[in-house]
Length: 161
Image (cartoon, rainbow, N blue to C red):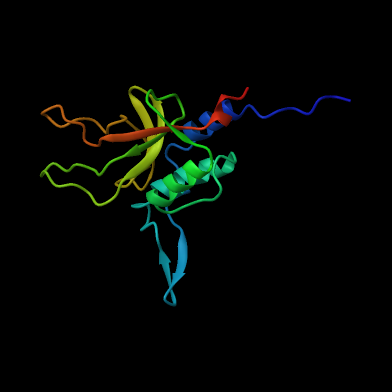
């Protein structure tokens, strides 16, 4: 009897992330709150956690999908993800608050995927879809990163061949 084919998890996971660029799939998610139907992702403005956890859940790398960064980080740690110092292709990135041109900062942390030293993939709040961008979202004229990377996370299931 032939051996059952095994999933090439890292290759499939990375290709799924790459193929998600430009997608609107993660833009809306509705909940019933106080008797009203509410798009908790605000038409793609707050879709990063939904996007990331949908991919992680698809590959059984997290227990469930989430709509917040706080719940996402809590679940990934409980699901076996751990911090790494040097990022690997496909690592999860946790970013700090967005720094604005006027010196203020945004209200939300952000999550996405590390691709390489010049590329990351995450939800783009302005475009309201998944986008490829620099891992720090570029720099200000003074050289400061537009968004600080707080941590990289990895799961050992992604090491399997």
